[in-house]
Image (cartoon, rainbow, N blue to C red; front, side, top):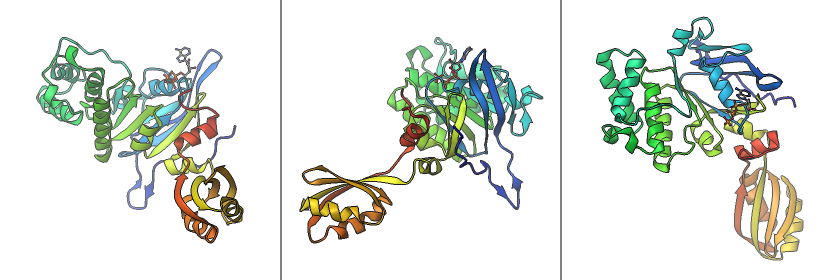
Length: 331
Ligand SMILES: Nc1ncnc2c1ncn2[C@@H]1O[C@H](COP(=O)(O)OP(=O)(O)OP(=O)(O)O)[C@@H](O)[C@H]1O
């Protein structure tokens, strides 16, 4: 299938400053495992303060893509740059700009949250006098200041995940990469993670966020790439992606009066594509225009029926995903 070409440049150029340097960019990334094409020709750029979502079902190639971005896996083809620094040419400097939170990370259960962070701070080579202050900042960001001196063994899975995120932020990376950060975490931790991530992006951090939870990607990300069978099949803002499904909205009307006559009148209203009775007092319409058409619909049935309730169902990312891939995300 030819990917829909709806991608405006990911980074806006301004006449005064020129093109912004992407915090993270990749081009032509590809990886095969024998016959299996795990990732093919993946490319995108994330500007500072931009949140980019990689949305795809299990096995789509998200983790393989991330492993190449963070230098854990060598691509068969393609390039990665972090703040303009080529990962293959200068891996140390490029990796210093990345904060990566994998799905699993080894933490020390007998140490407290703060002690675990101190361990990672030293591991990253942070100057000793900076570590303590930085730890307080990241504890605050992930909402664990009050529990910082409890042992990890007393933390929930979600609280451990928050320590992972804190550890990835200690060295002030340009881009934070989160691989399914809310899988298996409790609602309180999920909220703390999403709130913290939004705050970071507002402060100018670039974010790469992978998930198969549509609602999280819709909430957190400015741009979304839909990845399936290793390829980005569409990329754009939420609205651009949704428009791929077409602008047809479903409108449900409840009516009081002569429903058959109302149906005949509704069928000829401009913008109505399809209309059908769905019950004794209800009609479903497929329309171009959705809620903006409601006044015309109400006027059209005037004289034979009264509209007692309306509901407009607009397409969302879930519908887009289904439209593009033929499967639901949780397949
Ligand atoms: N080391 C490997 N050897 C062989 N095949 C692999 C290897 N790693 C991944 N794959 C395959 O590559 C494809 C992409 O896997 P990947 O883990 O990147 O997907 P994903 O989108 O991250 O899914 P998940 O959310 O399940 O991790 C899958 O078909 C997977 O089975």
